[in-house]
Image 1 (cartoon, rainbow, N blue to C red):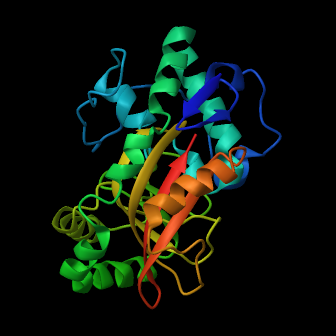
Image 2: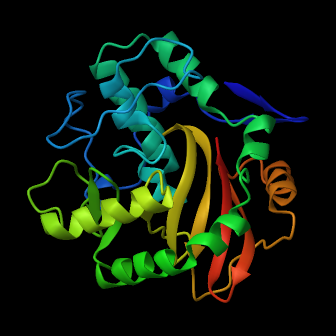
Length: 270
């Protein structure tokens, strides 16, 4: 498959082919599982509407699992899991008897477009940060206290050594999870928070996300005591430049520093 983007072309393996070639990475290392491809929802899952950009009919249950930053978007943990994420997308689709052409169509539709980049900073994240800095700092302190969790969403969590969902041990008390949910809603943190091995020590708070586990775009805030790069006063333009310069990377970021240790982030993956 070749996915056109602006004036360049990204090359990537088709997701429906990826499941035929099992990655040399060990999914056991992070508790990943490709044994249970059930599309049924686990207890407590919050169903989302399938967005209009999805070009073929899929169930809300499928979208919950497959969406960008969803329970099967393992690549947000680390870029090294991009192949496994594509493999899992194909394997779960095959197990659910989704036609190969439908999977290809979904993967193509999820790929970021030039228009998607422009929307990542609308409204401007710098202005949003000023309006919610105190609450974001509270959320950051909570995440620091729960450092054993690398992903906290409204309705699922990942532990450092276990990304399987559902699990009996969520890593949070019901009261603590409710506290996170309340702050997520107040701050419009659409997909909760995530830690990535690509940026050790950083905590990402995802405000916007579009796409599926195989491709998409996102933006939000990130706290990092290590310097992040590339930093730009025009991060949307910088993101476009990064994508053009690193077409084979599969994922790129751009950052705008808001204050010491706090940044706005902008991300594409394909």
